[in-house]
Length: 233
Image: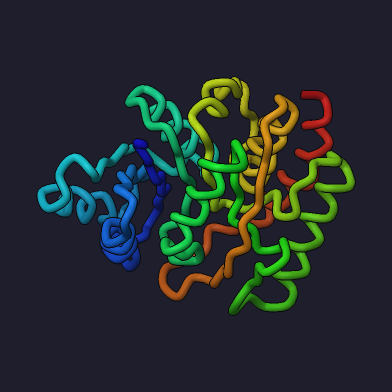
């Protein structure tokens, strides 16, 4: 089965080579697509240099300017669907998502679900090295989303996800509205409303060691107000 891991980047020069090498060291035959939003730190150049080593397993989609996480993934999804990948993954570049868990997400998605979430808040999941206030906001947001949407997902803002191809061909990608945490909620919500089964695999989420977090107040506000809008989808 053709498997593609999509990693969006903006100023990830400290992490990008390490994450690429780690993914390619795993069994399972993963391909990688880096979606870079014009990183001024040279992230794209590092990826291009590595393409000579990894050949057609490593791809890059360069965009001009910082256009947002959601649009990066939508561009990546469309790229993947045009090339007949069967399993498409979302993953961060900063090792907050452990690449070792990719095979666990794939196994669950290939056997028991249509969408599988690497979950911090299902039984067995946990968060490491986050301050208490960030955990409070994240867990509170998950509960808030669940109460408003009734979606049976414990970690709706999670960004470590595996989709079957049929899910992404059924969701109207051009109608996806949001770009931050709300994007992650919206994709899961649309899949659930379309009748797809969502599973959760417990993961340990670790705060980034290198680089700068892209979290902002606007991203949190988008998620808070966005879940109400989703009820009309």
